[in-house]
Length: 258
Image 1: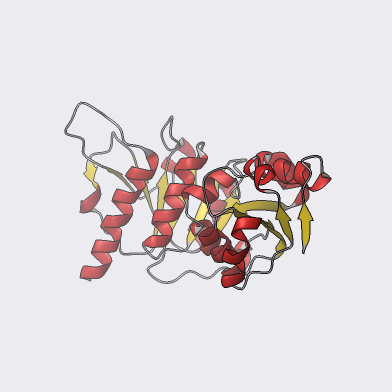
Image 2: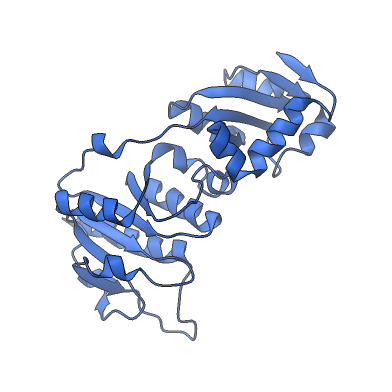
């Protein structure tokens, strides 16, 4: 266990860069996790630890949870690294890549396809809901989004670590859905079919579009059904994570009834 008391320590500069730079995380193939609950979830999900950090006040928290500490950082300096008010603990972990060719899907699997998502906060909230409902596999289409962005980790409450998440092209997703015989369902505000009127307990690929536009025509061309969430107020659209949660909840309800 080492102690860091200088803000000019190279390790501090490295940590700030890992926390804030997507391109640096990609280059290093590592990511930053803050908060005790998130740390525990990440470790329990089998991610390899690079290093664990805490303030002197937080040392006992990690020791009580049998997490080995690599560095204790001066309380003032660590406050310059932490993104939010937490227990004062964080870690750096090695990325791991889920392999789509080793995945197996059940006869009533529901996979979520996020088409060109843009906002990490929304994506993290979707991960949290998806995992809470007991689903496992997510495809992210045509995006450079960093799934280990600290905002995604935070807004997912660490659910990102318990999911199989695949970043794929449209063609890759199309081929996979066809091969696995998924029924493809798209959410669209202009659709005529109410979301509760479609069978959501079969082998489903639910496709949700980006925040600022609709699902791409590429996906629309291969869809089996297009569904809508009805609006009765003056607002004519929902936040992406809210819309996704409504449809996932309906799927869970249908599966419980059957």
